[in-house]
Image (cartoon, rainbow, N blue to C red; front, side):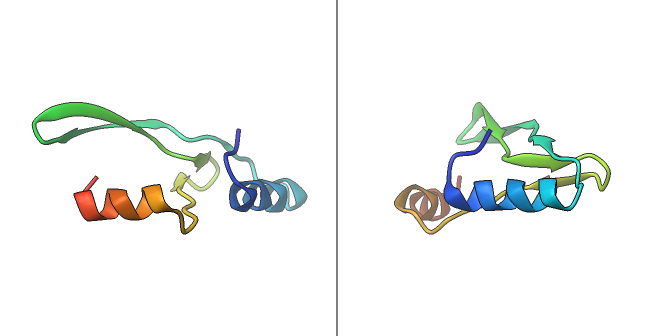
Length: 68
């Protein structure tokens, strides 16, 4: 699954280059003493990489400012 053109471009690149890519894992964390779960974008199991793709949108910059 993807949410932006940038993520789709990444998936197209992976598929065109025979790179195995799956949905990213859920990552538990604590913020302000509350348990939360972050869902990462993609996982490349052959490389053991979690890939997070961020475009320049308002929600991303608000998360940075708040420390999320």
